[in-house]
Figure (cartoon, rainbow, N blue to C red):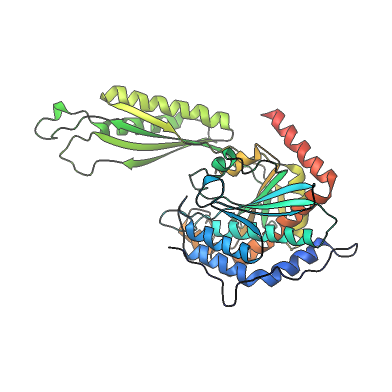
Length: 428
């Protein structure tokens, strides 16, 4: 089912009128003018995505709703881009050279609790950033550059950006920028309303199938091989392993398939184990230890184990130059942004993989939340649907656009971003 909402009012058929840039007219003026004229349509997109939460690779409503808005504004949009049904790409190009900046729009939700990670707001900030930077370029016909908005589905476990990277979606880009909502009280001090550089950690995952042999649990259990025993043995071994890992590391488990009756020796079970560590090397090493627990459980119970590694989420590589420009630009909208967090957060994102390929920004903007509430909680779902959260995403999108503008028009800033990227690469 496809649901397209265009708010109270007609679909926009042409881009809004915007002032031309000159020596006395800062790009912020253009950005503010453009978005103020489009805000009703952008709000409609937000409400549609929020009211129709969709899981990874199933974001049909979100995809179609955003595509309709962008096409109505005259943008060159490719639907179902790069072989992914719920991805899209919108492109605006001016001139024959210049820098290329990509913005990401996430829009997948979580099972059972909807937009508890606020991806509706990520989509809005990405849309606003893209439309704002396009407007700034249009107001400056002497500036060459290319702006793209990528629809990046399946961040919640589906590694959508990893698949987009593999398909060449980010090829040719000079920088990629995006931002994620968070509780307004989680940025180190009450004075801060967001964070520019807050590293996320790496995540790996493995899905294992234990294959046994069925038998009647009461009549002839000795003829069976119990796949549930194998799963329990593996879980117990990993639980004991948790004591022997570093405090900044994590292991999560999810039983995906288990017996539905008790009077049959179960011939099959399935489980997922995810590992997290500040670096990809650490997460991968920890995953190897988990796999040994799986293999040991199979030996102990006589089962066969088959496992498959999921696509990894890499830790984010911070870029001091881009972080600093984002701080400056968000201050134009009254936001006090912490430039860098002292410690990485114990969460992961596939945007980390993108930052391994080019200079990037994965900032965090605060939204009003109840005390002690963070993402992946039903209260965060409610918070991400408020008017205040929407306005935070609008301000964030404008700050992202101005940061993209800096990268496009100031060679020293772009050179600094590249130098930070290369310097960080040598540390890996």
